[in-house]
Amino acid sequence: MVPRVVFGQGSFSQLGEILLPKRKNADAPFIFLVDDYFETKDLVAQIPLMFNDKIIFVSADEEPKTAQVDALVKLIREEYDELPSGIIGIGGGTLLDLAKAVAILLNNKGLAENYQGWDLVNKPALYHVGIPTISGTGAEVSRTTVLLGPEKKLGINSDFTTYDQVLLDPDLTKTVPKEQWFFTGMDCYIHCIESLTGTYLNAFSQSYGEKALELCKEVFLDDIPASESRDKLMMASWHGGMSIAYSQVGIAHAMSYGLSYLLGIKHGIGNCMVFQHLGEFYPEGVALFKKMVEKHDIKLPKGVCANLTQNDFDVMVNVALGLDALWENALGKDWKTIMTPERLQALYQKI
Image (cartoon, rainbow, N blue to C red; front, side):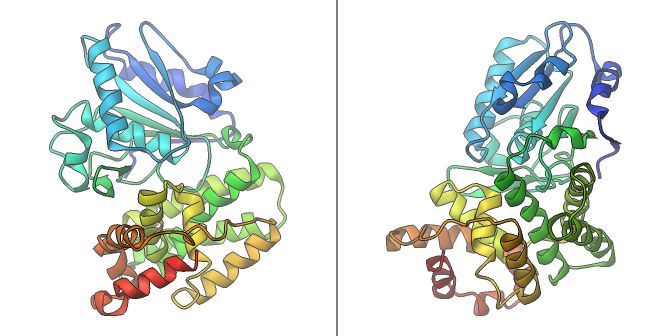
C-alpha cells in the first residue's frame, strides 16, 4: 500500500516541504516527469526546484512504452554522477506509470521489458512520488506500471512499484477536457464492475470497490457541484485502484490491451469501446454505462476494427488471451472453454 498520502484542494503547494527531507544532497536531484500539456501552464512555476533538479516534459499522446522507460533512464544516468534523490510523476496514468517504471529501472539492472510480469523486481525502486492531474486510472495507488513492450502490453507488477508518497490535489484536474474526463473516469467505473463481479473478489477488495462504484454513480449520474465532483472522482480513482490491488480486472481490460497493442488506442477510451459490447457478461454494469454515455452526450468511435486483416485479429486475440488472471477473474478456472479465440474475435469485430 502507498505509505504516505496528502489530500486536499491546493495541497500541491506542500510538495516542497514533502520533498525536502528526502533530498540526499545537492548533487542528487529530484527528476520531475511532467505531462507536456502543462509546459505552458501555471503549474510549472509551482514546481519546487532546487539545485540541479530537472523537469522532463513527456507527451501522454501514446501509451507508455518499455523503450521510452529505457531512454529516460539512460538520459538521467548520463546527465548525473549520482542517482537522483527521487522521481516525481505529474500527470495522468501514462506519466504516473512512467515515473514508477523509471524509479524501478534506475535501481535495477537491464531493460524495462525484462521486468514485465509479476514479482520480477529484485531491488527497491528509488523514492518516487505520484501526483495525478486526472482521476480514474488508479495508477497513483496500484502496484503495477503498465507498459507496451516489444512483444506484449503488461505491467511491472511488484511490491516495489507502488509509490512512496502520493499527493492528491483535486484542483489539478480542473483543466481536463470533458471527453478525457469521461473516458478516464470510466476506467475507474469499469475497474469496479470487473472487480465486484469477479471470482477473485474478497471482503477487502469488495469494500473498496463498492465505495468507488458509489462515488462514480454520484459523479456521472447525479448533478453535483464541480468542486465536489472533482473531490469525489479523485477518491473513486483511489478506491478503485485499491480494489484492483487485492483482486483483478476482467474482460474489458484484457480486450483493451489488445486494442492498445495493435492500434495504439488509449486505455480509457479503449475500455469504453469494448465495454459497450459486454452486456452478456456484465448486464447491470453495461446498462448503467450506457446511461452515463447518454447523459454526458459521449460519442464512441465506430468501425475501428472494420478493415483489419485476419493477422491483425490474431495479434489482438493473442495479446488479450495472454492475460490469464483477468480471464480467470471474469469467467472462472474454465475460462478457456468459454472464451475461445473465435468468440473473442467476434467481440472485436463489433467494435
